[in-house]
Structure formats: structure tokens, C-alpha cells
Image 1 (spheres, one colour):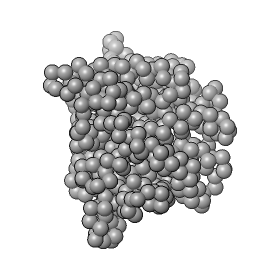
Image 2: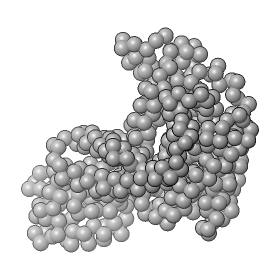
Image 3: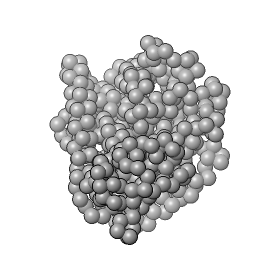
Image 4: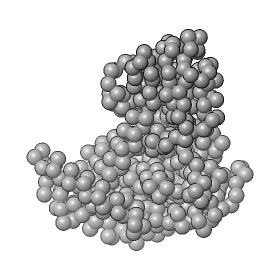
Length: 489
């Protein structure tokens, strides 16, 4: 079956519906939803029962890049800077040096066991060198894993920030495969240009985006998430245009925004959480459609050998060397080594050799696809087991709640208070967003002149307003009073 304008919406919506329904029950059997999405795409493809003919790496790459934008941006928004600050150095070392060591170690092994040239081997190693944000975010959160000693922030920071390094290495090695006379100095210059410009642009666009979101008056709450989508794509494309790394830029921009007070932040976070899941489904379905299972079978042996080496040797070596100068328990290092999930990102990166038309491109693509599937199956299904075995899991009853989860989960509060805003209060004539209330306190209603006003981030507080607050505890109330500089009404 060929995809046409008439049937693409019907087929797409049916595949999406089946993926959601099947994915909902998959964890009862210990199977990650991402594998289900891939399997459904493969079954619907030309080698499956659906017979849908999809053989367009360029379109798949475009869908992949758009999807990764949303996945990385959503992951950045959910990243609490206070949580990652203690492990910032470890995370950045893992996402740079760790990725490089993984690529070099695996590339050397591939060169030894295959007939690939050294540059082709390093290209394959680079493509699968980063842990996959989509896989790590979705599996950790859907399994609801609570981990000790800042392990989860470390893993999420690494997976969210290491794709740029793998992307640069992939482009560099691909350039060497195509043009072997190219200077290594050019590769080093490209690396620093991509990372430095990407970092600067990410922070600059984060500041600019915060200013735009909080100062622009759109009138409709539903337009604010749309505005953030526009800002996200502007950040990515503008950074890429000037030669920086767009993936790094949007992640840094999102981390900055996620840790600021934004108008309608709850709506923005909920929308991006939903779209991130949608993009994961679309991405894995697309890649499932793109692959031909019959073409993978000849490479299953070598693919399994490379995958096992990556999981048991290359990843642990890169983690232990990267973290050798940090004080960290051995079991924590082992767990970080095990959570080296490969998912959709390597498959998307594997489309670059296909589009470049290099000789070994089909073989590289099929091996990378097999590595990603085995990684999610082997590592993804055993994360909870290894966490318990290594004693790095927290009991569910003492699991901490992430700050931004409060916006998404609508957690119940333990107290309700009314506070009168006096004429000399600091809050008079200021917007709620500018007061920087703690996340543990929400204004749910404002009583004004015997009428009720529904508050929003842009709502201006007036003298003699009575704020109806939902609070976590007495400490939250004391903090609010200190901000408002008022007494009880």
C-alpha cells in the first residue's frame, strides 16, 4: 500500500490509536512502549501485514529532527536546575568525554571485527555513542523509578545533553568517509564552533524567550504553548543557520525556561508533556516503517556482537574513565553504565550516511537499528531489576516529587488560606508572575470588590484584594507572607 493524500490521515490515526492502546498495557509484560511503537511500524510496513511502502530516508530524517526538537525541549523544561546543580560536572563530562570514549572504543572494535575502514567504523561508533533522550525519559518516567543520590537527574541530564556531541562526531566522521583528505583541524574547529555557538545561542534565546512569554499579551491561554513552539523552532533553526548546534541550543533554552516563572507555565508544561509522547510515537512508528526487517536478518549476528560489546564493554569503559575523578560509589557507576539506552536518535543519525550515499550506508543503518532495538529490550526491561539489585532504588513511599511535576500532576495541597493585600503591600500593581511565588503555593481565586477573579500569571494584584491560596504547609504560608509583606485578612 502506498501512502497518499487520501489515506495518510486514516492510516496515521489508526497506527497512532493502536500504538497508544497497545502501549498502555505493554508494561504489564515488561516490554517498553518504544519497542511496541517500532514493532507496529514494522508490521505496518512493506515487509509486514500492512504493506505500507515507505522508503524515504530524507522525510524520515525531517520527521526525526522535528520530533527530537520536541522531545529534547520537553526534557529540558522538566529539568530542575536545583536538582542537576550538584551533578552538573558529572553530567557534562558524561555527555562530552563519555560520548567520545564510547565512539572511539566501539569504533575500534567494529574496525577489528568487520571489513569497515577505520573512518566507517568510527562513523558507526559515533552514531550510537549517545544515550537516547526519548528512551531514557520515557522509560524512567513510565516505570516511575525513584533513585538514590541524584542518580535520576544525572541520567536525564546526560541523555538530554549528549545528543549534540554524537551529532557533531557523526558529521565529522561522515565528512572523513566522504573526503578522507580532510584535515583533522577542520573537524576540531567544527566541534568547538558547534558546541560554543550552540551553548551561547541556547542561553541567549532562553533569556529572550522568557522576556517574550512574560511580556507579550496574547489574550488567550491556549496561544502561549503555541508561542513557545515557535520560539523553540526559531532557537533551533537560527542556531543551525549561524553554524551552532541546534540540539544543544534548544535543550539549554528549555532548561532555562523550565526554571523561570512563566505566564501559564502549567499549561505550557502539560502541552509539551503530551506532545513529547506524541513525537516519540510518531518517531518510532516512522522509523519502524522505514526499516525492512528482511534486510536486517543478514546483519543480526554482527549486530548482536557489536551491541553486546557496546553494553558490556564500551559503555562501562567510557563511564568509569569519565567519572574516575569524582567521588562516587561503585554501584552508582555500574548503574549509570547500565542505563546507556540507545533508541531513536541513533536511527535518525543513521539516515545521514544513507542520504550521503556512502557504500556501507545500508549496512550501517541496519546494524544501528538492531543495536537500538536490543539496547531498549535488554537494558530498558531491566532498569528496575538492576536498581534493586545494586540497591540504588528508593522506596516508593519516600520518593521525592520533582518541582515541575507539581505543575503536571495537580498535586493536592494540605491547607487553604485567605490573605488580604493591604494598600502598602509590595504586591500592589504587580503581576502575579513578577511576585515569584514558591511552587508549593498557588493562588486559586482573587476576591475583588465582592466579585471573584480567576488569576493568571498576567493578572495584576490590586489593593484590598483577598488572595485565596492553596499551600503545602505553614512554611509555604510564611514564605508567601514575606513576599507580599502582609498580615492575615
